[in-house]
Amino acid sequence: MTIAAPAPETDLTTPSAPDEPEPVPRLRRAWLAHLTMAVVSLAAAVHVCRGLWSAPYQHVVADNVSDQGQFEWMLSYGVYLLQNVSNPFFTDLLNAPRGVNLAMNTSSTFYAVVFAPLTHLAGPQITFATILTLNLAGSAFVWYLFLRRWLVRSGIAAAVGGLIFGFCPGLVSHANGHLNWTSGWMVGIVAWQVLKLPERDHWLRNGIVLGLLCTMGFSVAAEALFFTALASGLFLLVWMLSRPGPRRARTAVRPVLASLGVTAVVAGALLAWPLYMHFNGPLKFSGTGFRMRYYSEDLVSYVAFPLRSVAGLFGWGADLAPNATEATSFLGAPLIVLFVVAVALLWRRSSPERRITLRALTIVGLIFFLLSLGPRLRFLGEEQSHIPLPYALLVDVPLFDSALPVRYTLVVVLVFALVIALLTDEVVRRRDSLIRSASGRLAFGVAIVAALAPIAPLPLRTLERAPEPVFISGGRWTDYVSDHGVITSLPLSIDVAVDSMRWQAYTMARGGDRQFRIPAGYFLGPQDYEETGRHLVGRVGAPDRPTDKLFYRAARWGQTPKMTSLDRIQARIDFEYWQLEAIFLPADLTGPKGPLNRDALLRVTTDLLGEPEHVDDVLVWRIRPGVDPVDQWEEK
Image (cartoon, rainbow, N blue to C red):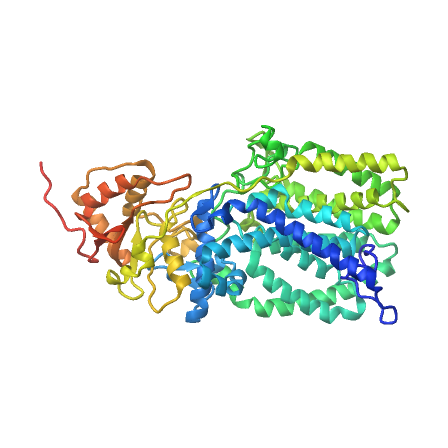
């Protein structure tokens, strides 16, 4: 029993019958089609990421500098993890002396471990660009194979659907720093296995494989896996309930439930440790550190064009997203209209079996569309607080309270890609097409091109970031901090300044016996370290301390207040809390939109600690915990 009409047997993903071997010419054509799609997908991904590849050690995505820095840290931690056999779900290298619960963050353990050799040899900058490129290309290619196997007969139609999703505005938007949300290939592989669950004779094998895939998916993108489970479960439920007759429905339900039971056992056993760390581990929190009502889809954004697209070049793009990384819809009015027409046409002229698939896809898309709008309607950038939406009922429900509504849109986009692929399949077929006239097929072909061309992506914007100081790369830092001691560059790491995390990441990637810890950092953590923090929503970074706020204001806003005795006493308390042994100031500082204010930082720190040492290409202040900064007599 299959969920949708599969592609013809020429598809390599469909095994041929033993007594009917695949004809060699057809097999070669299939391989050639797959190879062509792989090359096209990779070329498109390189085009999108070409700004990074042009200077991977100097360039960073301009619209999300900090998230790229955070992921580079996570990738480097994979080298440290394997070298030291450390805890993959908790570390004390960040946020000294408290540490960070990595299970509550996007640690991407799968990428960190698999690509650890590349990270060690070439650095996390190369690994980041490599994974990002492969994610986009792999997303398009896997969904191309998925469509060839399950839904369409034409390789062209499958390629169109794969490219729509792999390079949709949402995935390209998330390419601004997010290795987790660009991993659409993982969603395709899991969905492929889900569609095999109704097979009565292979329930055990299918359950085991799905359990292993879910384990992998959790370590790639846990939130995306949650969405995949929701969408797949809803699709299966609608599909099974739509089967004609109760007997056929029961026939489908039994192997599905049996396989899911096996999946739960396998995935539950393998994920027991990270799930414990997530729900009950040290430094856990509830919900997320981001506001759901802000990170919700604007209703108008669905019919608008993205800024970083062909339409955006002509000034037709709309700035309605929470930020450049969460511009997940922006399909444009032409594609919305084409989708509605395609669903109506396919519904009227398809077989009953295909209508079941269309019904399930449409219901999934509609429900996820409503979820993407968040708890309150947003219209043209303004929240309509008097119009509650279904998500308002879910904001405190576990798992839903950790998901951002705007990201549900990616499932809606996937439904669009599958339906447009089905329409394209009818356009390119001459025999047995639901579009009977040649002129009709030509008109629909032109409409597909016209709807997709405006949202074709432009390359990611990049900017220069501060180079790694020789003080770090040359190892001189070891003269100023004990093994596993605490040192930091200025300002302390936070979401808008992650250089200190970068220097630590590059040191971890190179390996070696000596490493250092840093205070603060860019991560999700509790609001406080008492029991109350475990039950409150999370926050970005560590709870503020007066001295790190002093450094931050100097770096970000250029504020240089005169240091008082109270400031020095507070700094002494904070330095002792962090167990800080040294501070250094590089020649260049990377900020969210360009360099930070180094001169202001130098004035504030010199006023606080005195004149620094000039070591290689940085300025260094030694810290004696509990002693520095020393009190100074103030003039009256």
